[in-house]
Length: 171
Image 1 (cartoon, one colour):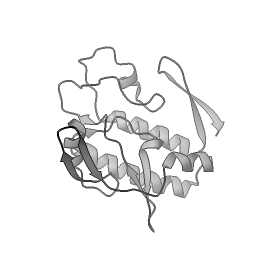
Image 2 (tube, one colour; image 1 turned 90 degrees about the vertical axis):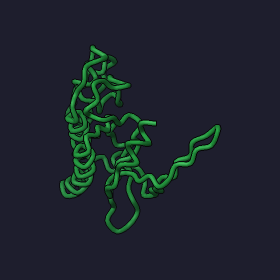
Image 3 (cartoon, rainbow, N blue to C red; image 1 turned 180 degrees about the vertical axis):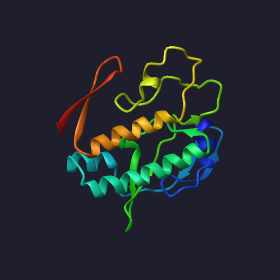
Image 4 (cartoon, one colour; image 1 turned 120 degrees about the vertical axis):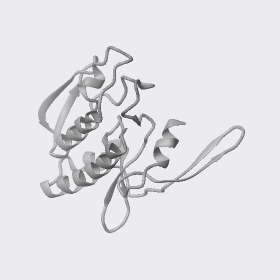
């Protein structure tokens, strides 16, 4: 499976760890790191907006993980607050999870060309017309920018056709 082959390669404090894979005749079992510090989306909903210091702190964690992924030639393609978890402990580390849509950036074509979560997906992905066309790791950077925008209490509206319009409004 693509997700398993990608996550096996990862070794970074801001990315989910896979410890073991067990396969039976009927099932596949993944032994993943237990991350019990809560979801980043819950923090955003509760806080509304973060201080500049907290936003910088969390963006550093996110960008370190994304930079590591990109150095391996991997695109996550579904970066959103629901896929960011806190690792409990003194450092409040932010960890990127859910590699189900991740893919190698160098592939000549992708299994899912137009994928991701509406509102976080880059325009070049959302507006993809040609199923054989490719795009770059930059699509993940767009998603990180949306998250940064949300950290400062800004909202966005999603239209049915995946076009994104931003509205300057406090959450």
